[in-house]
Image (cartoon, rainbow, N blue to C red; front, side):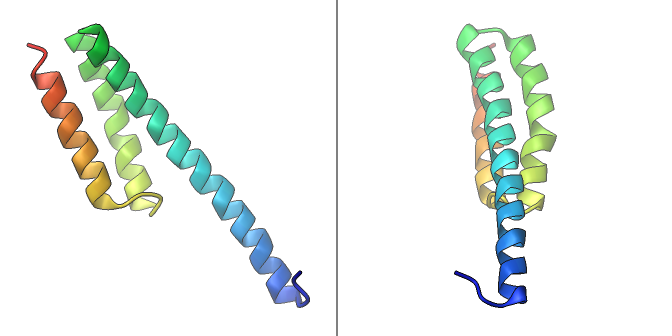
Length: 87
C-alpha cells in the first residue's frame, strides 16, 4: 500500500483517469455498434447517419490517447467501405 502522500495522490489520479478512459472506450464502442447494427439491417441512410455520429467520437478517443490513431483510421475505413457496399 502507498505510504507517501504523493503515492496516495497518484493512486487517486490513476483511478480517475482509468474510469474516464473506460467510459470513453465504452462510448466509442457503443457508437461503432450502432453503425454495425444499421449495416446489418441493410439501411444505408441510417448507417450513414450513425457513421457521421460515430466519426467524431472515435477521433476524440484517439486524440485523448484512449486508443491508437491507426485503430480509429482502420475502423472508420472498414465501416465506410461496408456502408458503401450497401448500395
